[in-house]
Length: 384
Image (cartoon, rainbow, N blue to C red; front, top):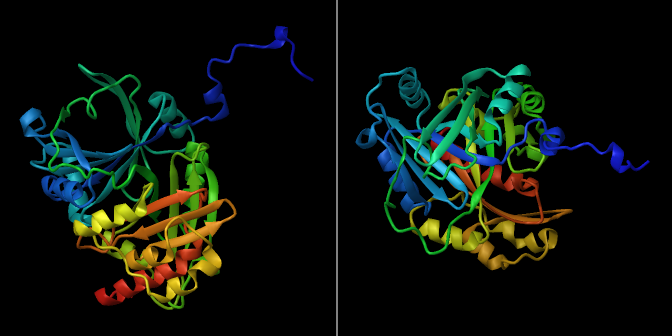
C-alpha cells in the first residue's frame, strides 16, 4: 500500500541508509618508491600524466618527498624517504627494501571518513590511523586508514569542499613535461590484488563484511588456466561500481603461475596491477609505445579468428593486430584491453589499459591468451 503524506518521514541520509559504506570513488593510488623524483618523471613522460602537487623539504616535509600526478580523475602519488625520523618513514623505507617499488595505499574518497572508519572497525577491520583533520588555506580534509591484504592500506579520505592541489602540506607544482594533447587515460577502472594460496575467500569476505562490497565476478577452474599455470579470481565492488577490486590467488598447476611469481618477488600479498580507463585505446597505446612503454605481445594467430567470436568493434581487426590489443565480448557489450610489462625490475606491478563499450567484465575471453603471454615473459626470466 502506498504511504499517505501523514506517514512520510524526512530522510536526510537516504544514501547512507541504502549503502552503509558509501564511497565517492578512488581518491589516489599511493606508491612507495626508491626515487620519487625519477618515478614522477617516468609517469609524466611515458604515461602522459601531469604533475600537479609536491611535498618535500622545500615546503616543510623533512622526511619524505612526494609527487602527485593526475590524468582525468586518476591520481597517483609517488613517495620516497629522504631521512627516516618517524614510524611512517621506517614503514616506507622498509617497504621499498622488502618489496621494491609498489603500492602502499589504495585511498578511497568517502563522504564521511569518521563514519566509514567506525563502520569498518566495528566489523573487524584493523585500524591503522584513527580519523583526524588537517587544514590549510584551501579547507579541511578528514582522513583515517584501515589495513587490507599484505601491507596495503585503504586511507579513507573526506575532502568535501577542499579545493587545494591534493592535501594540506602539498604545494601546487608545474608539470615536468607538457602532457599529450589527448589524455592517455581518464580514470582508474579497477585495482587488482594478489594474495596467498587459500586467502582469496578470506579477503573477499573482508570486503563483504567490513566495507559492504558485493561480489561482482568470479573466475575459477578452466576459466583462468593454461596448460602450465592457473589462478582463481573474485571481484568485489561497491554498490555503484565506482571502486572495483579483483582479488587473485594461485592455483595448483604444472608450473609456477604469474601469481606465484608475483608473491615470490614482491615478498607477499600486494597490488598486482592497476587498470586505467581510456576512451581511445588506439591513441593511448600509440602514444605510450612511442614514449617507451612496453606492452605484452600477442601472437598473430589470436587475430585470425577474432571476428568470428568477438564480433565487430570500433577498431578494425588489422589495427588491433598491429597494436596487440585484445577484445572480449559479453551479454552487455565488449571491451578492448592491453597489458604492460612490469614497470620496474622486479616482475611485480604492471598496468592495464581498458576501453569499455557496455561490458563491465574483465576480459574473461582473453585470459588464456593473456596468461600465455605472461608465461612467455616468465620463461625469459627463468621463473615459469
